[in-house]
Length: 190
Image (tube, rainbow, N blue to C red):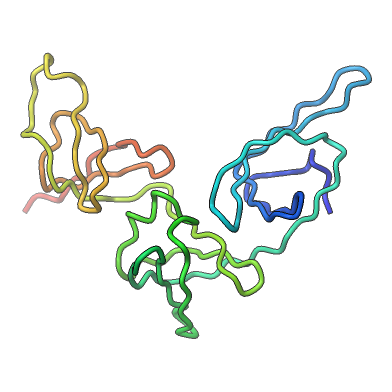
């Protein structure tokens, strides 16, 4: 049990009969007789939906033991993403809804931490920055009138905005939390 004022990102809690992962939490001390408040962004571990809630700082919350295991992504079938433990070769299916839009970036044999609550997978920790390849975009342009950004379709099918000098076939670094372009991956010249 922890006080709500002690909530931190990455913790798992039970609140009103539901299990949640704390995505972010910020404590605001009260003034005078008013108690403090903790504002938290939570993700439901059963449905994958996000929820924002304000807790009284002194509220006691039950913490849940989350175990992280490195697993290799195998394939996607329907609404499930299948992973394998590289040591025991045990396979588990994780609903894509629990991964969210980042499930589109999973590639075969990609190793990612899968979080378990007991023996049930509840989340997949995707890397924050990922190298991706541009499948289709308009030809490179250096015209100022074209604007600072243009749409580009990635090999995963996701569309992002990139600078005008990026061309089809380029590799870029993408911040998966914001889905924004970071920089171009330079290939060594031969």
